[in-house]
Image (cartoon, rainbow over all chains, first blue to last red):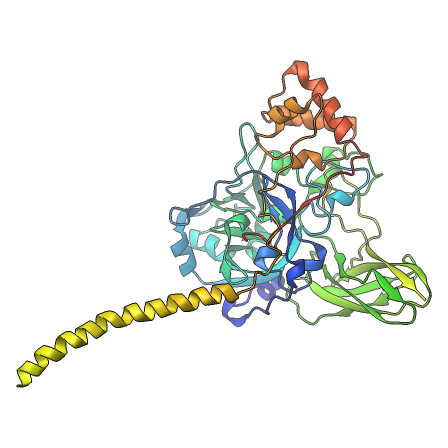
Length: 371
Length: 136
């Protein structure tokens, strides 16, 4: 509960820093024309707040964008009195905000070997934004949540075609009550259709598959949601196994928290021996904070700490910078790894899984050093 | 006399009141136009808008089946970026047929062969489309 209290502060107490992504880096990488999927180039992920127009886009299918004037959010299931709210009614409820990372569960899928099917995201299906809306707890309280409710079923408008199963999910009620938000603003602007307008779920610290877009129903239930997207997709191995050997259903669990991870966003391709260069990046985790980011130029034998930017919120990313002076000519590979506030250390290799979720292996940059 | 002056001044005042907003609006429009001209585009305007650049499946036996089976739900990009072994493609086709993809049984093997040939583990031809920022 402490985490939730820390993550949610009054929206008015926040002012956005100016975006500082240079125009030459303001572009997106479209990986799927339709359904629309696009990732952000790493060199555009250099600001604490990711600008809305540089924030990655992930659609499963081709949603019918909701007309905000006709849209309603239904809250039902194990509640004393089901309610239905229009966007105007939702906006009249107490506002709350959280600045935190949203990462697609499949970010980094394209880095797994052997290859696995799905959108071949590399690094940029991630961003850090200020989400504003209404606490899920306030909504469930106003409907009179019953003690029998253990899971919150979520439905959105990512409507699949034909016989494709519906994209429906559920999250444990404790997590939803702790710090879940129904957000209608992103970085101070009304939520855009591509990001789930009129409202989407925000689940700080958890992977994007829980952040239901084009949200229209929250239903408190005693049991988890069933169906393809809960029972087959978004599953991660309970224990690591050999790469390329598919895990059986009973060896898997539902994807929830993000793993500790760091990426290098800026590193010069060339440097001179004896002259200092700067590397920059971001780090985040499913834990509240990042404790340290370290870099290694000897393949992980030894590590030196990067400087962490002071700006931070629970489950948000930390920007970091690292001053490095190469000593001799040749090619240098610098690896970055993060450690979170719970002591989890980013591993050299991510755990291979047949759907390619939650990749968090060390990221590296290569630098050609001349004398 | 007073009444006469009022008769002359009143229409003048009214005319001024009616004219002023028009004049202000025109000036404001000019200012807006000038501002729009001054505002530099914050990205390379030669880049395509997101989701407007689609690449077709490569030619070959099986392309027509892939067009029919895949493109109702997603663009060819979704397939073109894959690097899957035959076993994975077979499983993927089975899954998609279950979800409604139109693949006649007689053409199933040809489709899998086309997918393996073009989008097997050695497929390194896919590049994402560099586009404008979202919504621009």
